[in-house]
Length: 504
Ligand code: HEM
Image (tube, rainbow, N blue to C red; front, side):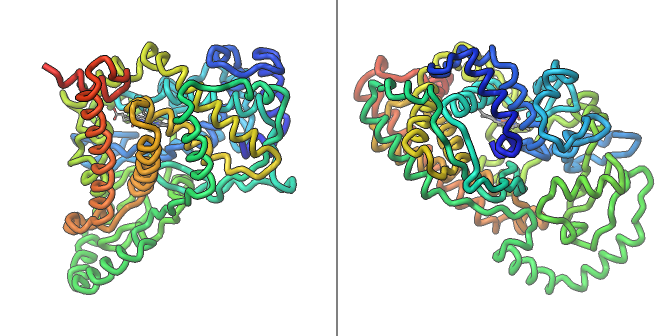
């Protein structure tokens, strides 16, 4: 949205396409989505310039191997700088320009399914994102509705700030506040009433509360930006100062190991960590300009490989896919997922295969996703109605889209079978926990640098306890509903698929 407001002709082109395919006074339906190539190009161009997961999810090789002619020791943490690949002038013409048209002409066949290493916002290989189809459906539908129902402008016509804040998920540093103005199709929104009125009203209310109240959780990549971690680390440094000196001497003796990729030298014990900026993706891109697209950096006690070219990404994600088929886990991630008992951190093996198969075949296939079509329509229309109510006023549009997507995903996860009041309370709690966890996973905690302090990762423990609390409430409520109303009352949602998977 910020890019389109900065380049109004892109918004106009998308609206012209929508007017001709949907009709000026009609409402967008999911069936229109496949007929909107310019809108699709807009989404692709946004994923190119602002990939939501800029360094993908770090991986590690299970055996020592060779990448780009260099030796990569087993266990090295591997970052693939997609943000930098997507801005590589060797691949993209005028890479910093927001130009959706590039996906209609020269790059028209380029998709995001991981086949072309110039464009990999969802990763590639066997660990590629499992949610692509859902994201595709949601993002195109939400954007189409927003552009067809409203014109968008910045408050006071000021230029919008596009500065990003690094985390495992890239966000705008300042939240995007823009003004919607109703277009003709907006009038049609009044015709939309839903049967689940009580719940719907609740949802509108909570969406509104959330837009005004939800505060940004701050990111910090570097351990020293966290006060608690800083105190702990300083004490640790003081006690071990003599050992540091010995380690330094040792590192001086072993430096320049032949065969390892080049990279900047760091300090003993903490490596290059104190010199990193908080915008890690662009800091890595700057270093890659000096040391090359295959670069090694020591961060704390870990050797890290940073890859910044499509060729290097291809070597890891295609040529050596099996060796790099594990996502690297932070201490907080391990605590939250009971030691990697989820799909993202599950080591490559039979359990991961079973989880992946269940997700693809049972949960995220075309038939199941289609069965939630009405639900998506309800949530997106509720968002549009809320925007209509606030037309002419500044709106935090990013949060609105986040809440709408979140409502759709939670309804798919556990259905709409909870009574309205409980559903809303649980949704808000779950949303807060998830935002906290995503932020936490983007941070390197002191326990990641000094594994000896793993047990002191209090943040990870707190988030796990909150997550357990919310999920236990959902499962308890589900069991009570089933006991009271019997099987026929069960909603067709992901939790049900899970229950059926467990039953003998
Ligand atoms: C714009 C939204 C999203 C982006 C950009 C995104 C991106 C990614 C990336 C880069 C990875 C790592 C891929 C790799 O290592 O090669 C990933 C993994 C994953 N994503 Fe997404 N994702 C998004 C939304 C979703 C959604 C909505 C879901 C769930 C429905 C989801 C579920 C997963 C899972 C389960 C994995 C781990 C797969 C595995 O380890 O086998 N993602 N995603």
